Image 1 (cartoon, rainbow, N blue to C red):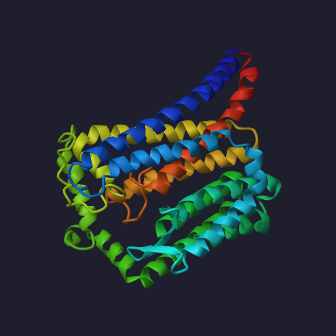
Image 2: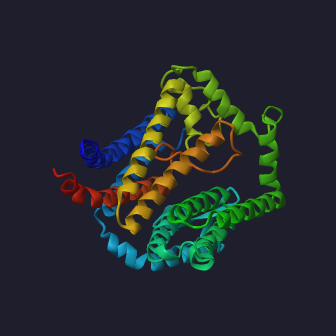
Image 3: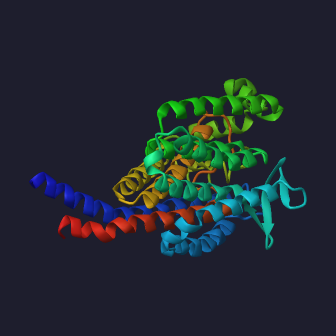
Length: 379
């Protein structure tokens, strides 16, 4: 009896504090990003001051955060199909020359009011919202092949295919990982998922093999030291940043890798810059915050009684977590190079605005449990 009461109190207070921790960790990580971008603005950024640009995107993201936290989830539930269709059309539009903007060989952006918007970023959330609704409606059919596996896999697969055509392999793989996780949590048979995962790996491998640029990235990744001046140059410089920082770092603004040695230092490879200036201990502390974010958000999602907000919260949690895993894996040489930014810390307008929106939605979902958990705990 006492244990049941203690568990009830634990659930209540952990749920109430979950929202505050999610919000505070978001502010902390965003602040870390602004600090490191401010430091970088003194050196490798000359004409483009990404610190002030990121600060502007933070201001833009605040209304999206408020939308996420205040929106009626029933409204999302009812219009999820239209939302998914809208972003599917937008992803098609991105591929049209003259509509989609071509940057570094990839057509991923649409210019809206003079602002480059990466459609695939917001498509990630649209897929999660649609899938959360689908899993809610077909909760009793998830063991079946058609309703429980094929349909919820094919529909997001169409959007992933459009994203692969940009090409943007990293985002497509990320969406696939989130979809597989949600299907697994919903009760889809593991054998179906295993076969699909093998098929997905084979398809991605074929696409990489047929693309000389990406094939060179893989071969360079397999032998980093011998390719440090060519295909693995960026990865090698990032690893040097981790090493040169030591435990306590070289000091803010004193990093060497940001002096044009490390390409894309403000986006994909910002973590080595942070580690070089603040040290390995600080880098580990940041990873610990991400880990706690996952644990708290996942705990909050599991406590939700309704399927739609529960799967939506799990999906948002997985998007952030998988991005961290992929980005850190890439910059430490554990994974081949992918264009995935580090959530909240890397520079990126579309990414930051989407993250603010997702955090608002996550808090919105968690608040549903908070409203009823107090009575359940007898408080």
